[in-house]
Length: 616
Image (cartoon, rainbow, N blue to C red; front, side):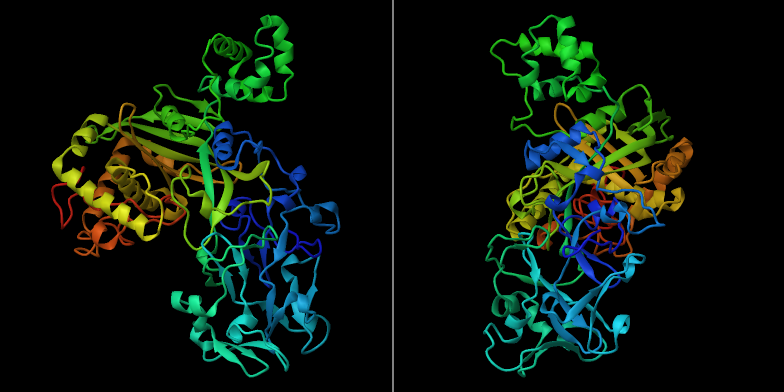
């Protein structure tokens, strides 16, 4: 990683962290200073690797535009630890010091890093030792460290700025004359905002508690300047700002799209031919043997090659023969369906045995035939995720294909031509549910009434946050999502993985082409993936059946009952019914819906309802 002022290594991050925890625009808390990851305009793609995943690239292009041509890993070169002055030490992810205001740990003086009061000490052999120092005491490297100021400003549009210390201490007035050196002092040992004071040399002082809360923010803080420190821009915003503690968990939320790598050739080359039809149309009228060397020499041929030349040629002829019909193009408004190809791959009747995707159908546990259609073990899978933006203060909307664009901050100052991505390998268990009993259950009057209450809570939740009306995922989704959370807890006790390491993928869709299934999987960035703990749970049907029964039994009673089971989503304007941290909530690494759309009432009989549970 590099600082903006001078090129030097200041720390290390894993590739997965650069997408999930400390991505572009996020503040990284290092041992002695904090930095912000710079935008893509500062990254060097020459030292990154291109990952081919066409479905993911199409979905990203829907978000950011057709100019996005590639998915790339963050730049990296294997280090030569014997010589920290080699070129490898200057290759990495660029960062800049943020916040720019620093506080001396000895005299507590508060000033900007550009004021000349602080000096940056580098250490090429120990990047974790890089720090700012203040010359108020001792000499050389024994000088006291200067640490980042504890508070910053943010707004809901993703802007981030230094805290306006002078403005805040002097209550919005421009100080004139006299001594105006600032200090940040604390009283007591609690560290709470009421005991932290910003003090000016002119005698003005103010507690930091005056900067927190909506009323205080409106009275005591300036409007947002529209600053994006990762881009070095000021957009001009004017919205109400909000004081945040440095390193707060709501300071950065990634907006990502994730897909599984599916077997090549699972779909016809229709989409790829249509995407490149402008070039292919010029050779489609040639004889096949004359067109072959031209087509295989095109730059996008590697995207078509997995389908085989004959299949590509046949598709070209089909589109050429479509009189009056415009070839299908990815420029249409039709959304990219990420779930359907995965569903078809998991539910196909034959088994798959490929390096990045392996399936194995096993027997259903005895007693589950009423609701389970099939059980599929997935010993090997590959998940590729791409970062296309981020939000602050509030988490992004949960469906990656319907996130409100105005709240998503950009990754670069100009429209990007590539986005960072990461790949993980792992294993999982896929459960497909029978459609007939599920449809009958969904149509019962009691379930429809419960759906009405849940949907009313969904609408109220969005209205309270001034969000546009969003699509209700359906009762089927809430049922399968709740079951997935129950199984995550139970599987974690048996598989050897922590509950936070097991993720979910819910396939729930009604209508003419329905889906009803859940995939529980775990993945790791290591090239060998995981150790097979999840797959082993399904190898013996009686073991899997016992785990399912135990998970359902645990869901019937929560230690927070009857409060949990009586929770009404309408009264509280929540996106969940009978669910809480005791019974259903999972870690944020497991649940892509941020623990929303959960309800034990739809799953099993509870203290408040004994006529709704699908497994009751």
